[in-house]
Image (cartoon, rainbow, N blue to C red):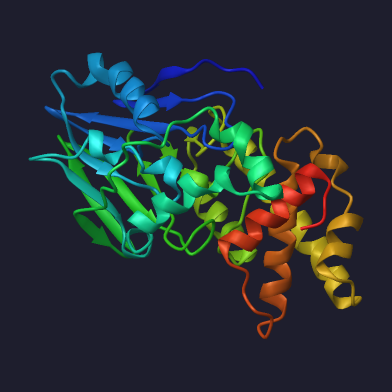
Length: 313
């Protein structure tokens, strides 16, 4: 799925910085420009990519400096570049739940992954080669909230809507009513399979329903090209399909591994990152069986890596 890197004008003072092809670590950001100030949606996975993005936005922010940064969630590819935006007069906002995970430990975990001598290391090294995580100073929010938060960005209304736990513990949507734009973070992936780290998967579906209820003209996904309600509905279709098929197999007594191997995903064969089904099916089983121990991020990623490489986790 080919689309242009760089700033895209969405109208009514809203912009998106898109990073092709939307694979692991290749996330998008947004900019909402008001009178004399701007709001930035997310930073990127490393300092070089974040600086390139800020330089690309510079003609738009020269007279409308970034005074607010909103991080949609706590995955590193959406906040590791915060230090390049932080400073006097800049407020960094995230949900309470997201802020709890925006730590040095989060950074250290990501830095360590390529050095593992197992299938996880084998899987992540080609991805990590595209990024340089050196020099990152964890820069968490200066303002947190739960539920809803309405902002005035130089006379432009921006609404923050917490929909986590879903993809992660503290996902937030950013809605710009005047522009009909919704920045979704990783509630929406376009071109790649959706991924449910925290869930339950039903919560991700509910979050998507909230996006659709806003009737957006333009949707800026966490990864991939711009889309609209049709693209969002396909993400919902994927999640519904996985949830339905995994539930049937759970009730039939199949193991997680047997369920993953037997679900027909041919209707979504065009999506990249197919291995995410390993985490998504596991999430369904955990929702259906409250007594089942919850997998941590390491186990989830191990299962995804094993599926992609065709090895046993």
